[in-house]
Structure formats: C-alpha cells, structure tokens
Length: 213
Image (cartoon, rainbow, N blue to C red; front, side):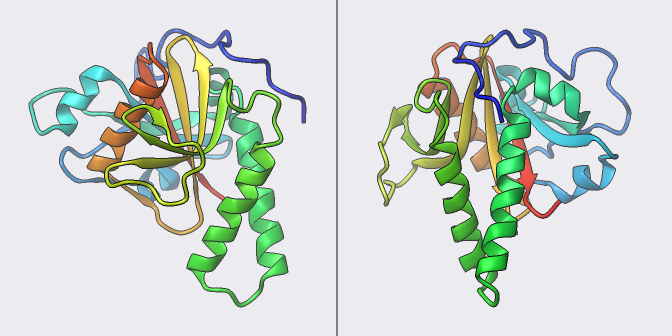
C-alpha cells in the first residue's frame, strides 16, 4: 500500500454526481434518515454508495424547501478520484473485520464492532499524513479537535476517518459493522464539523463501508 501524498490533492473540483444523473439515484429523505441498505441493494459490482452534502442540499435537511442531499451508487473509480484514500480505508476495514472475528469468536455484535473500529484506527494512525490530510477517530466539537478525548461532550461528534482531499472536498469514511442508518442530525453534524474543522470545505462525501462486503 503506497503512502498517499499530503493534502491538498488534485481531486476533481466538480461534483462526481455532475451531469445527467441516472434515474436510480436516490435523494436522502427530508426530515427522516438515510437507510444505507437501499443504495447498497442498487449498487452493482464495482460500485459504492456515496452521500454528497453541499450547502444548498442542507436547506432540505433543516426542514425548509430546498434541494436534498444526493445519495446513490457510483463507480469505484469515480469515488477514488474524489477521495484518494477510499480504496485503502476500505481494505483496512475489511481486513480488520476478518482479523477480529477470527480472534474473538462468540463476542456480541457490539463488542465486535468496538474491536473492529479500534483495529481500523490503529492501522490508519500508521499513515504518514496523519494529522495533515487524514484524521482517525476524530473527536470534534465546533471544529475543534478534542485530541483523543475518550468521553465527548454533548453535541460533539466522533468521525471514524476524515480525509481532506483538497479542492474543498472532505471525505468522511464510516465503517459499518451493524447499524445501516444515518439520521438527519448526524448528516448535519458531519457537514457542520467538517466545514468548521477544515475551512474552505464546499462538499462532504459520506462513504459507508460495510466491513463484511
């Protein structure tokens, strides 16, 4: 696995959802939740579901009339162009799942999930761009890095893996070992924290990674 270059990176400035959108693309339901199971069911071989958050799409999340966030299956190559560490994070997540399940048979789903996320974080922290272009287990509150705090204050978020890909693009990787939904509040928090943590952010891609897929 080759080290990725330091941020900022030469990623596409235009939305990877730009142009004619296939009718199969979904929109995040206003005021409810995103159920990742639906876009995963629609994703074909070599595709990955992605949620795109932009300022105009957040109007719909706040309950006002406006565009909704876009969610749909994209070709892996398109995701790689926008989020250069996508393939590496996905590989680490899948390998962590296999290691933990083999070493700890009989644990509950919750216990397995905790160990898998810990294993993922340990591997990500070996990367040379840690703290420059990539952050692992980022506890953040109003854009301030809580620097490894075990217990977060009310209203704070913990982001499993955050990548600043340049060109105003932030990629949030969300390994999934069980839960397959994302609430409206969580989408808003991801946007608000990414925007505050990395000034100049104009779009946030949220990428769920089902570790057993």
